[in-house]
Image (cartoon, rainbow, N blue to C red; front, side, top):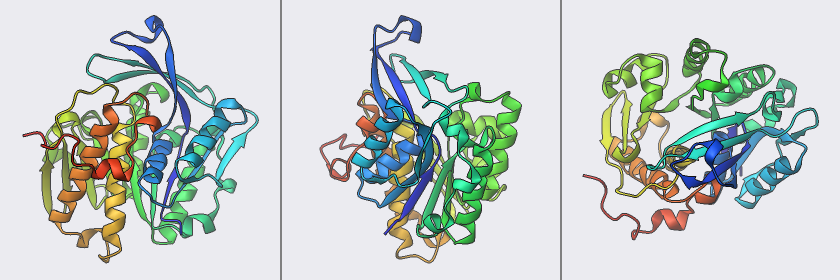
Length: 327
């Protein structure tokens, strides 16, 4: 039975083989499946969740590679379509010494931008419990209308809706457009995950409590801010939590946030089977879920690439990884 659906872009990340150089100076690249919503789907599949992905890729070797990769990671790809009029998006990724990244995108236009509202299957969405989306498919038409149509169906059928703005400002016409459209989508979601930079960009404050409260005023029931090696901060009507991260030597943070989101949704899915809704999940259970999500992100950051670095459920439960959370 389908449990979670992720909608959005799937693309190819070409990750620099050498750390500390920009794209033009990279001696070579590692090809890896990527795209935040696709990463989330793959991460959920690796955790044993019955997950489906909705999106478009080019009818080209990279597109077929992506569909095969997701399927091989336990994702239902029946709603993953091939576009003949545009190619699969590419991203060249350079790595700083601390594992953080910069991106150069090739997607003008790319296949993911051509997803149409008529291609969204309401019956397919109605079968799931959680629906997840990002902001990239909100940038232009027709993918924007397709995303909103899918959210409309998810809301109609009572799904819990998760949103990761995942802002890549160089893909938008302007920062103002990015801020406006990303904020518009907040009221559509029950769960919102942002990082520190996105929190400041969307709320004009670096204060975690004030920023998360401002996001909540737009409608979400819960907001999570990832803090890299420092862990994460959580806020809902019942209170707030700061959950420590893990001490690791980061190699590549590509996909770490997506692994976090997947583990978060995995934990919430299990809790929703016992609770009537998100607001009934006790804060102590939320803390346990966030510890698992922090661990998923940390494991991913110790390897290169996104999908190849995502942990399995067995790896997530392995107590030999970074036994002591960061203090």
